[in-house]
Image (cartoon, rainbow, N blue to C red; front, side):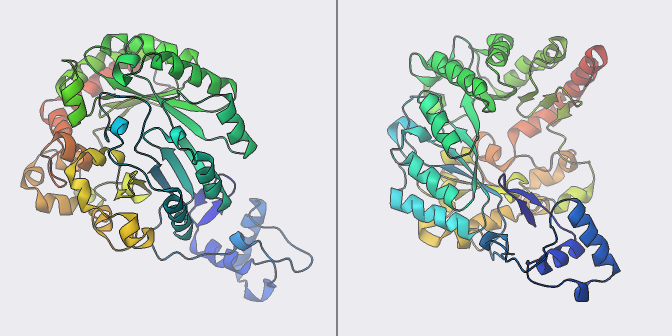
Length: 446
């Protein structure tokens, strides 16, 4: 694999290109080692600017040499650097206002960053809780950057995001994406438990847009804010947001206690969001990307994609991994636990997964309960789940999402994803397809 700095974009290499680049160390005369195929590859690499001739020996920089990592490759780590937060959100996965999951000390966090570098991690996405409340936030950022890892996205509620924060990021020559949750015009303060949260989020998004930082928004849909959806999308567009994901509120214990009757069933969420597929096209595709969770991904420049149709309907899916996303990234909780994704923090099953302090990241990414899950195939799921194995739609959904199975299904890691079951068995996939086809036919697909 070839890594392109400074963005750390990976490129898979052919066998010939890999062998050639191993020889290109700035000191080896290549001619004696090249056959016709490698000469052709050499020319291609020069044309692409991957290598250049040198008139005299010129050793590479240390990080330009090939490095072999014994652990499984993970391009990016999604890291909650704290479990504390300055908001009191009604649905938090980790009950952040109480700091239930705590946080690593500065020394522990430094050690973890060192381990990330030692495992070949290329990108770190930072979240919380609220990451900006850590007093050592910039120390952690500098430690990450010292290893030439990049910071891809910072997830924040926006309250503490100001000119000074953006100045500090630019001073370090980085411009990460900024992701801010926004839960509806007139409803954001209610959801986040802090007066002024809505204005703070919109101001932060506008500031980022003015300063050239790309932003995206995740929106939790409930009975109270669903009718403000189109107004909310337009408000977000006006402050420069081009990517919005709307989801039903996850059924965390906190949300079950604090929803005040606003919780939607999954079926109610699908019914409520179906009309907005047509609205997106009718309104002229007001933003670049609009994802309606578990339903459809809508884009300006491409036809819509139905989320539930994960596989082609044949037995080919059996050898696919249960969770494709977990193959290239992982999530670290505030207490240092290695998980496939953040939603699993609200499930007692998270305790089956290892803590980095106990076994180290290298072992966690090599030989652990986490790796048993990550390496699991759809055929393994079907072997453990008779209901999925007998379902007529199994080769299309592939068993669905494991986090959803834990949170909103059978509450078992190898259980049924109740949302996928409902989408397929109740005919919603076909309704989504018909709605999408009609909207694209009436208003254009791209």
